[in-house]
Amino acid sequence: MIMKNSQAEKIYEKLLLLQVNDDFMIDALALRKKCKDLSEIFYVDGEDILFSYDDTPEFENDLKELMDKYNLPNIFHFPLKTFIVNSFLLKPEYYSEIAPRLIPAIEEPIFYTSEETGEDAVHFPKNWGDEQFVAIEIFPETTINDISSNWDKIAEKRDFLYGIKRDKSERFVKSKNIERDLLIYKLRKEGKKYSEIKDIINGDIRFIDKKIEYQEVSKIIKRLKTKAEKKVPPKKS
Image (cartoon, rainbow, N blue to C red; front, side):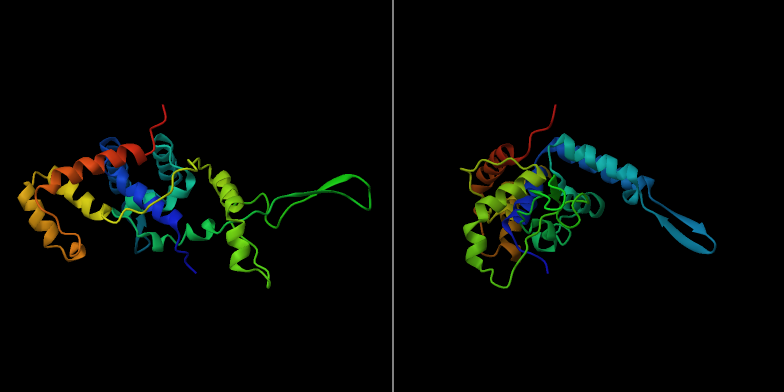
């Protein structure tokens, strides 16, 4: 089952906004070119064998360096890899490799005194020590109220696991026009006039209820850049 959640939407929007960051796009396109140049088809024993650079440890190192440079936690790995290799971003609902890790958990090691030996001991949850992911155990009597009433504690442990630091006073509000605004930004970088951009946007069926006037184009671009500066993770020095 694929989970629909605001966390996946936040990841998607942050990666969209990263495309407004020229430094990030230079690095991302360089890695994309590397994938293309270093992937090759070999003829082995009568068969064509594809060697894909993005399946190698070297690519994973390159991807990790890119994530570290822009301070992106591990949860960005799958959607960022898709963007690098396939040249597009999957919608949040298709983050099937992320969704299971967004199911919250509060299970921790249990410390106790052994009745047999009288010594201190510890019980580890199943698979403790393997690759950690977020999960929650549901009992027959568990209700939605049980989850919602404990959500702050669950979310805190989820953020700790993924190394996410957030301003608790800042509430995530999904942008309704980000895809339209990014297209406006892209068209302007391509040299299109404001009137041309207006006609393209208003003629796109995706934005049938988000039509614009040409005077709005510069305001939208300025607003998008301001938002990107605030939301895009700063590069690590």
